[in-house]
Length: 258
Image (cartoon, rainbow, N blue to C red; front, top):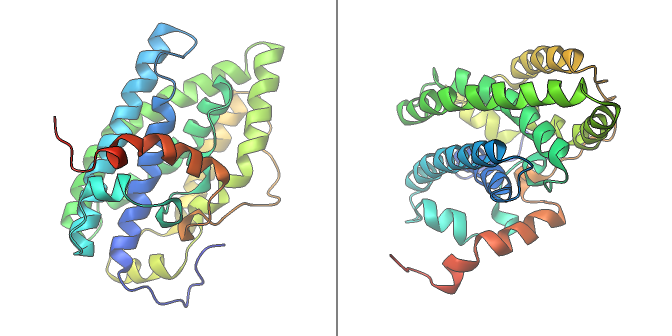
């Protein structure tokens, strides 16, 4: 459940930036898990490059979050020395890779959201965040083109690829509503002239996603049983397993440099 809109937050901008950074850090790590395992070499390289882009975006955002927080934590401390309950990513991005269709549908649903979000944040009232958003937008547009083309190719492909892509969409759809929920953090940051209008963002996302699903001959799932909790640290079991791997080296050798 998202934080009630009336709940006070000590440092809403730092919290908002951690949400942005954690989304991209977790999804970037998920994509990196395909390195050496993708179905074709070209896609292995593409997914790895997209993972690097997302982790790069996360690095910039979490560095800014640490500066705004003012507690001496840099991007590495925020990435590797927080437990799962302190992560603020949406549940969608922590879902396991599954087969290739699950990975590409998850990526497409998030890419459509991220491109629209960065586009609006690139004009926001925070100079540092606007600069990061403008730079990240260019790379996320490529990600969206890549993932949407794959969704169309798989959905409008063979009977098996269509069935598996529809199954992936049906499985992941319940996690999309959380991307557009608004709570006290969004309200506080909006009052600073930074956060975007999530209702308007959802309308744009609906149009973009519906167009791709239609071309992919896929059926948009009904809006039932939305899952939420990631923004307040209530995650699925999948995040804990992922963090155990992602944080293992940094925690085994704290402060190591090479």
